[in-house]
Length: 176
Image (cartoon, rainbow, N blue to C red; front, top):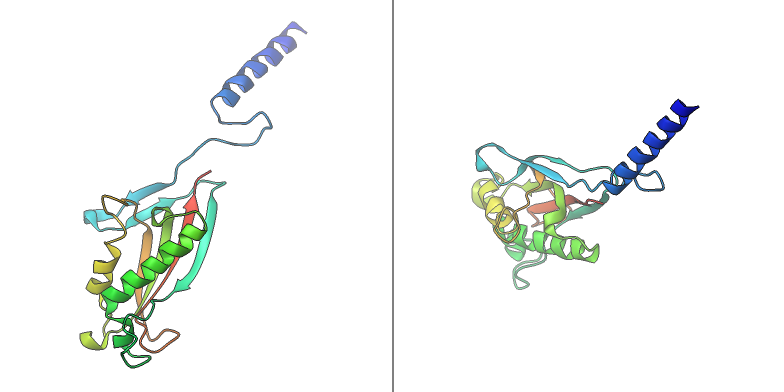
């Protein structure tokens, strides 16, 4: 009986230490504050090679977004109406920034990004990766917003409307 009471007392002491440390709440559920971790890509490229989101995080999936019209006087549905790839990237990321703010998130909370680029007529029908990067690096990996998402960038045959050359979808997360 003494051994049982000793083990019971030890269990109570350990439970108190674990609860105090924030590993387990008094209700028995995990509450440890684990951060979202990011592993930089090799060579200083401004993306994360990997992002780890802890269990219990709030995760938000934003549908693909496209840019707003940049030049209303340009022919409707033309690349000139939406601007070049850099202009379209900035416009799209600003729309994503607004959509995230409505969810009480920021671009710093983006953990995964998929970028779809249509070939640019000004680049012989090839995607303008440098143009996309010039827009992207205004928002990610900066002194004001150092977080970088894991990211995929691909060229696609077309998007939902003529003249669009950029569509971006993101996944954002907030650790518990």
